[in-house]
Length: 139
Image 1: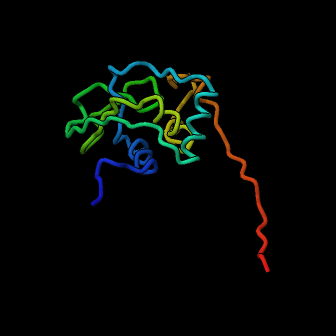
Image 2: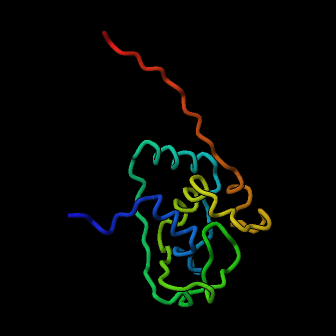
């Protein structure tokens, strides 16, 4: 039996890109500004280690709360959004870092890095250098 409460990171990031997951304005500020903390989270994801859960509140009315896109300071105009929206109630720090690392969603349509919730912390982009290994067949 499939557990419908489990979401793939790629699926979550696609929803964030489409503004289907928003951050309600009453949430605390982004505080994971330390690069080492961000690197450890990314390393945990790449090692397929558990990174905790997130809590989403489903809503059929995007105007229910004043909200922001993840990683952004500016309130989003929700009157242009249609359909269901999910509000990120817990997991903002992790999802902001992971969205920043694994997509361009936070930077799409951005006019200035000063519009980011943490310009110095989020303007850093990571890259992964994978070692190429040659495999040999045993005879």
